[in-house]
Image 1 (spheres, rainbow, N blue to C red):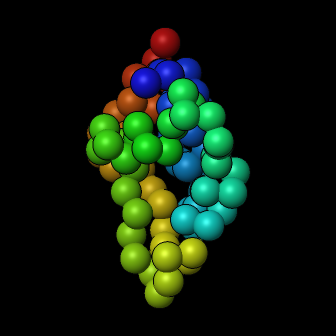
Image 2: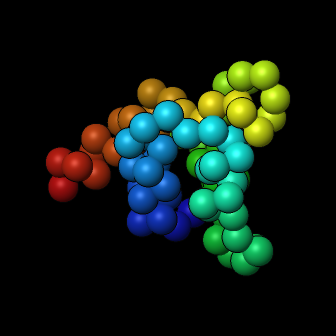
Image 3: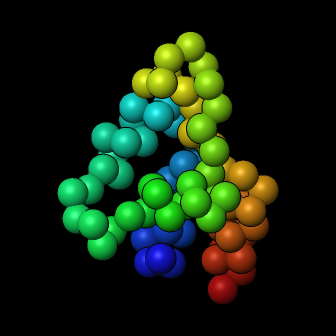
Length: 75
């Protein structure tokens, strides 16, 4: 996992409510080595919360994701 990109991703999500569609559009990549979204989901740092449709589902930090962002802020 690329920790720097992951922290940037988590900080971006934590700034304001983000929809799934907005998140995928902003963080989509075709490079198999840059799997920020997938790594964050697998690591339990973000969650997708249903909100009508998949596109409008909310993406938000989990407690583990908030902890990672806070730890980075203290550096």
